[in-house]
Length: 446
Ligand code: FCB
Image 1 (tube, helix red, strand yellow):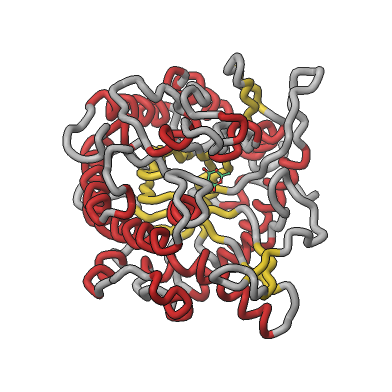
Image 2 (cartoon, helix red, strand yellow):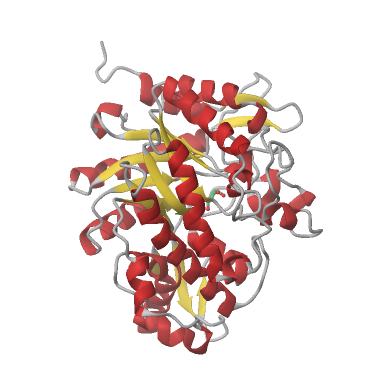
């Protein structure tokens, strides 16, 4: 394994870790926070493995100082976290809860005090439950822009990077079509309506932020290369549909291209009414695109495979993490495409990471060598595309610590720091030591 050196990435490269509010904070009834759709969903029997909830999670709300100290120990120069909308505006719209803003202000200041750049995601799926209609209502898009402005007014002078949305595909399709995420609906028309309102809310929030801040603004969708199972015309077209469904659906409107035509004809009557004025709003210029990358998909044509007529091939023969195939070249493929095909001016890998069934060893450590290899091999890909001239300016490992992994509960561990959910003890895994070594060792051997 060739040794990576931090200096190879250039002096300004952001090396960070990422988390999200509902996955780590806990304290769901404290500090004036209102309920979110995830509180409701996790408390609905049968929705989450083991009946787990985010009520306590990593108890980060009470352990901010300890967790920020961990960031300092790691040597990262950036930290990506999300703000819980229901902490800031408990009913989604209207009265602002200053105590919620105080919490994030303390976090931002303490991160800054260690020389770490705070990078904010405004929406990582914890929608205030009080917003009636949720993302099916256009008013939620307006409410989001108001919330964005409230946060920017308090923190805008200190935050280094803004993302409006995290993975809108998950919110729209896992939340409204597949039912795996809150609010747990199963209806394609609803998913498309949600997607449209998410895009609108992004387009409304960008100028609202711009009026208050000078830092770069973007969003952080997830990208997944879609490869045909064979080179048959049918499979190639099937893979293209998955690409439209997953990757192009959010990217192209944001970049001013509107919705992909091939998908519009496939969705037909499921599409909500959309106007050209809305597309102008959605296409508000962004400065940076976050890229969440975990996996690729190998796709075959299948007449029985739902609206898209596709089937995903899981057994590709490649090694897997606890939940997916490992495919580092897919990250380079995504980054190249975003730059060479879509001309995105600046890219940041806003999430990349792997789950393994980690156990604390007898020596009190977690020897997650497969995760070390995972990070090493993906960082190698980042380096090679940078050398090809692709403007990648940062990398955030998912995640700082094990946390509430949505419908998987606490069983799926993505952290580089192990969390004992009984005692809340944090133990850096070997992958954390690997990252720290990369980030803190001198560029050249003495
Ligand atoms: C991403 C999510 C993040 C986490 C990782 C494993 O899709 O953005 O919250 O669940 O996957």
